[in-house]
Image (tube, rainbow over all chains, first blue to last red; front, top):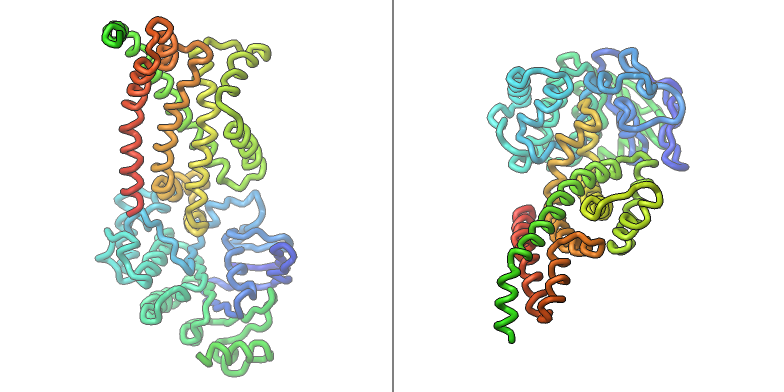
Length: 242
Length: 217
């Protein structure tokens, strides 16, 4: 479903992705963790071409992501992306946020798109907030709308870039609950997060990165309880200690 | 003496109105053109294509960094040497368009730059094209930032139309010059000229202030 083949990326002199080889199977839930600056966000941002790469190739659903001949719109409609800072469109209601792409990219009739939109809002438990503007919603609610926005395109893959990091602690649960239920539906997910509870519950695999390299991968139970590398052990002790 | 001249001035008032009409025409047409070109250039400039960004940057710097009277002389006296001979009225419009678009371009580009990069990325991630990202997501948000200084710029551009009198366009300012040759009461004549400009500008100043307060909320 997603394949990285010898992917390298530099920000100036910083080697932010260092020869990444990775395969994510259809329906797999992959959790990516690592210290800040390890390249984990960059890794998933490359999957829908929010970032260019300098060497190697990424294949998603048979499409070469960074090949200029690839239909970028088609690629992106198959991938939902959820940001740390939500990035809802502040001038649109929750429902308008969700229907914008289905109407203008997939060319779905407005009434039909609104029906889908309301279903997705219901899906994330916010059916009654269809007409609310982002500023009227709490952080957790905004992030759930953002997830609904991603789901409205019926993507096969959902990417989450630290989806709970900008949230107050009491709102993290409601967002994770939505993600857990998504994971159980067989959608392919790549999640950058430090939420160990989430990882242990639903992840098929945990990937630990540091300094642009994949240091370790494993089943969540193995990774968190018996890390193979010192760097991973050190990292786990740090996220556990607070 | 004053009252005598005042009577003359009243007699000439239709002449002033024709000047006001010409000023309004120059201002109205050039503001529309400047706005259209300014928005297109501003959007291109906010894009990250190196070529557009820098080409437009050079144009903006030149147009903003030289006096309008020099620009209008170039359009009216030098362009003919390069094969573009224009009557005063179209020459005035062209010069206004060149100068005004540059200022509006900067306002638009600044407004677009004020929108967080994540808004572009969110829109791009959902498959919207660059043009759709601008149209549905970026511009509607940027307008809040753009509108107050844009209307302020309109006021400045309306006043700048007075410069077109130097190439013989019979606008309000030129009407003032012509009149003052017949009625040697400069203060009275140009007070009237100023008052008529003010009549157009002031509503826009009020609008700009109103927008600024409204958008700040």
